[in-house]
Amino acid sequence: MPREITILSPVDFGLTAVATASEGFGGAVEVREIDAGAALQVMAGDGAVLLTVYRPLLLKSAGEVARLLPDAPDVALPIWWSDGFSPLGGSGEAGVSIALRLALALDAVCVVAD
Image (cartoon, rainbow, N blue to C red; front, side, top):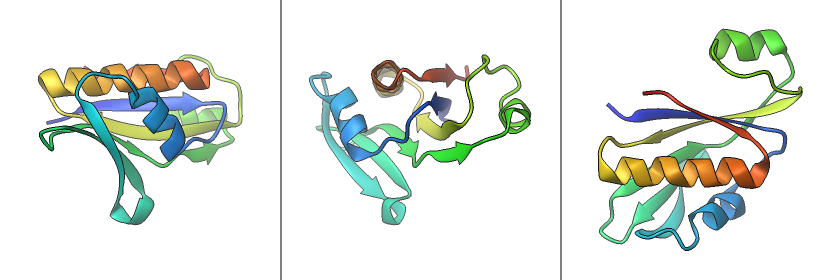
């Protein structure tokens, strides 16, 4: 079962932001679109998936954020919601680190379910 990651961002983001967050991270060598652009994957040199991030969706209701993620911190609305997943183990830890770097760059909140 993968680790679930949620990014709550004040801005929309895409391939460039994910690639920038992955840049210089040991082992991350490629960012690619999957599922006809519905998600982005960060890949390691050996082909392992480090992180999958789905395209953000705009949420305008605080009730919706609370319903979907009850333990989320307070965020200003509207907010861009993105689900992500990383595998368990070492490559998953790398994926979580990239997601945290992405959130920092976006001034976003990153919630990692354990």
